[in-house]
Length: 189
Image (cartoon, rainbow, N blue to C red; front, side, top):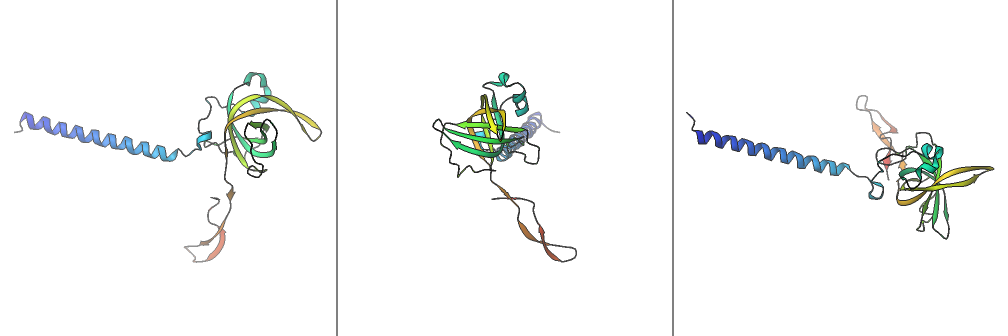
């Protein structure tokens, strides 16, 4: 027959072991979450409301000083006395903030930085994500057409590395044939 004291001792031991396991699982899951959050720090904090370019183009006066995180491909970099203007072809962003170039572009916008941004570091067709706030609209002449484009004041930005397709020898495990083809679709350099 078990004594009352030994029975309660084993329940206390089980409870403390369960607590240790639960605490360990929480710590391990937090470490995994920290490892997965590899967003660049300067564009990490997305605005509460995801304002899209077509919303701003439709009602520009409603979005003055609205924070945005937009991205796309650089069209042009122009350095002026006040700072640098980057003209960007807008693309929607994925959950990391990288432009989705396989989606259709919805237009363009201009981002303004008070810093000097070297056109050699920010060449045409470079993928970029901008975090900032809408500062109004400006008329831009494209060819013989005049269009209105939003202006975003840059708080932070990130240049994305290029994807490069590489060819690696592929070994056919079933027929033991070697040939060159796609081993992996993309590798970051």
